[in-house]
Length: 166
Image (cartoon, rainbow, N blue to C red):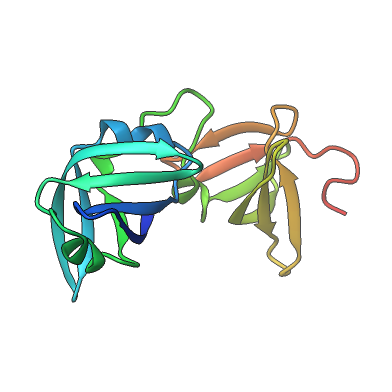
């Protein structure tokens, strides 16, 4: 299951909810037919009838929720999708959950460390790589540095520019 949003509150009287978007692909909500919500340790599938994007939020209408009281029960609920509902990515695009945990090597095949976090910035993402000695390196996710990513083998190769690992 993959987290894509969180219900903030009901909106209106007919069961619509306002939700925070926790995905890099907000437009994907418009294509979804269902969302999964875990309540009381049980996963439930909620069929969607409409998803509208506005002002950085998504407004969801579920087929089986028809009142503000019913929508109130979803307050603070996390919204998930399954693997097959993920957006297909183009070449050289990766999901963060696929990157975290892979080993990072330099051009000479020396282990740099393990990718432990991805930080997003307007100009580019930055990979936080923890070296075997515990030191963390900030690796910019740009073409000049990231040379190869093989998710299946859990391996990334980077070009170490001067000062990158200092």
